[in-house]
Amino acid sequence: MARSPAGGVVVVVVAQPSSARGGSGGGGRCQLRLRRGGDGSSSTPGPAGLPRPLSKLCLPARPPARPPARPVDPALLRLRVLPPPPAMALLLEYEFKALPADKQIDTEPFLEAVTHLPPFFDCLGTPLVYAPVKADLSGNIKKIRAVYESNPAKFKTLQNILEVEKEMHGSAWPKVGATLALMWLKRGLKFMQVLLQSICDGERDEDNPNLIRVNATKAYELALRKYHGWMLQKLFLGSVYALPYKSDLLKALEKGKEVKEEETLEKIHQFLIKATPILDAIYEMYTKMNAELNYKA
Image (cartoon, rainbow, N blue to C red; front, side, top):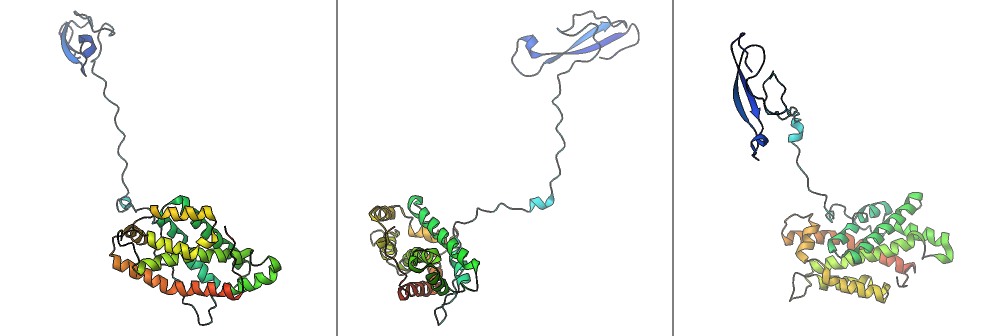
């Protein structure tokens, strides 16, 4: 509203809401009204709800002002979103040490190498079947490590573990302690070794060359079947129909990277060159010490 000196014309701008016009659209309209005289009286009715005399300009309410934007740390702009960690470390990232001439396998580096292998079974899918295998391997590794860490000097090699536990447990041996844990661990590793070796050797179903049923069945037959009861046997042999394609398995071993099949197979071959002699030496040790058990799980 603009005031003039006494007796002049006063211009009043009044905002009329849309509801007053029966409309449903947003916003109101403004009207110009004249008022004469300086006493503040109005010669025309005011909008509903406005007291007389009109004393100020009515305008639609403004939205609240937004708070000022916070400055962005330039360092954050340099960050990038990383993919989730892969399910499986590359086989060559934690290699087995070469088998010494006396075939005495040091416990600590052996545990360091095998600790990273159980996630391999995540790559095979079928959690109902292979999740227990993974958990079993992890559990056996923890049992062996607990024994080793109780006296590292006394249990320096895997053979030391078997020899000391044989003396400690008497007739209960070898179905106790780290001896039993290592026995089942080597069987799980044998399954893995035979499966990978079979793939590297090119064994396959000629009608379905991208499937790994042939390889997994061979691995199960050689490593685990005779230690399983009827129910577990049926479960495992049925699971081969849910295994991933060979191409998907190899990609998983490469942390999801697109790598030529030949390159991945060469890496698997390098892993097997060191892992196989270690595993063979453990089997040989169990045979020589008469520590192998054939009971069914």
